[in-house]
Length: 198
Length: 351
Image (tube, rainbow over all chains, first blue to last red):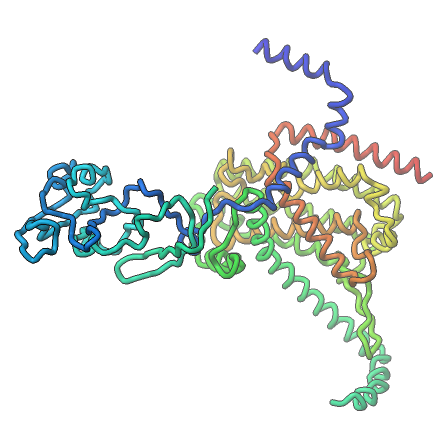
């Protein structure tokens, strides 16, 4: 308290002519006005997400699971159930089956492969456990839906090719269009029109 | 109807217009039309102004402002208006119902009444019939006095609204606004007196006419203008001085308890007050509708008023809010003596 009062006293006694002129001509206020005026004409940093633009994450992003095929188009998943065993929240269900038709890379493929997204915490342990690199966490992150049933995703959907190719580097904002379906709302990206976010 | 027929009708029309009774009827009709037009325009002004304010705010803060309703969010104010219409109109159970209902109207009527004497341009002549129409509802010989007096009445609505809501925040907002209005009204009026002394008339039309040919009052009364502007900011409760609706300490200030259309009336009052303060600044200091002759006077007038409103919005998103004791000390210790000194020096120079 004492220090404060001495400080005030010092300030009032050392009020120079320059400070006085600064106050009289509102120099500080005018400087402030110029700063905000400059900001008015700088480019805005708003990402117009659902309407026009969408953020494409980096490759390392952990989003919705994908099941992959090898170059010949054979399913990489061998139904080993390691992902199911490694899952901390036990949200993965794998039922393997014998298959001699050559759909997969081995004689054993997944008969059912289901993930319950309501329980999944996207830790990526299943991805680490997978011996054939069949399972990857993809870049899909719009997971809201109109029904609970939709939150259980099965192999038939996850094995489809991804809308964003694996080679795509990510980390950019691209042009997008908002699409409303019966089950969910999706923002469809158009990778050809890009804009760096910084 | 061909050109020939119109020409043939003209003498008849002129004869008709020379009848004094017809002229009187026309004058009354004309005043009625002017009142209706001005009221409608002023009523619809808050719509573009809210949009402008939000866009200015957005771009100053490096964002976009409203974008989703219509192209570039241009229909946003309409959506807001519809929302306000259909919201529930709550009257707090312990509020004074009669005062609570009438307070928004009390604050709204004076700001509209101000427009009765504000001139928007010089006389214009309607072609063919050579009939002169003035661009103001009435040219009072005490115009500026009338404007200041009526605009000051609007504070009653704010105080009553704050009192009737039976809420401590609303009451504090109302009290603050009454103290603020009283202290800054003085400085505002004294700043106007400097202009009145130069022009030798209280009529707003005469004040503007005296400034024709770049003899704008801001060049003769710079100090007066600064005082007028600062006091004006305080009068219309805008940001460096918006203590009656200080969100940080008072919730929303005097309109905390209001919702729906009654709240919209308070908003309307605020925006119309801002417009009338900008118009007053333009009339008194920036030469009203005077300007280079390649544009008509009314356009110059609108441009100047819009720039002035933009400046009000610009300051709102630049400056922080003053503390209450700072507000009072600026009003009484700086602006009031300075405006008195301004009057004294103006008087000495004129003599």
